[in-house]
Amino acid sequence: MMMRCPNCSSKDIGKIGSQQFYCWNCFVELSVSGDELTVHQVEADGSLSSLNDLFSEDERKVQW
Ligand SMILES: [Zn+2]
Image 1 (cartoon, rainbow, N blue to C red):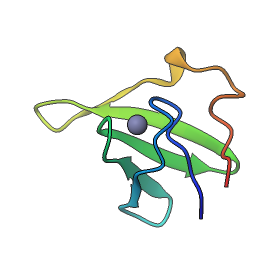
Image 2: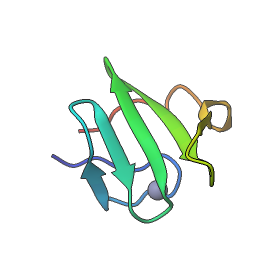
Image 3: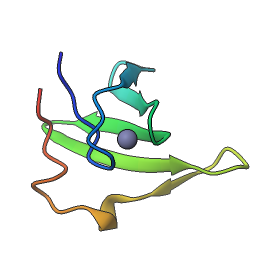
Image 4: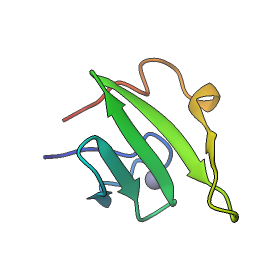
């Protein structure tokens, strides 16, 4: 599997759930739904905030 982080383009992606991944380079959480990525930032208090607004649809396409 070759998955790239839409935020930093790193391939240093770890799997943390069946459809969930984590970028060890920029510390964002990536959820896959269909062929689309949802990007979340994990806040200091453990909550998630969506970063989807920062990316175009193309950038959030899953590139396996
Ligand atoms: Zn990243």
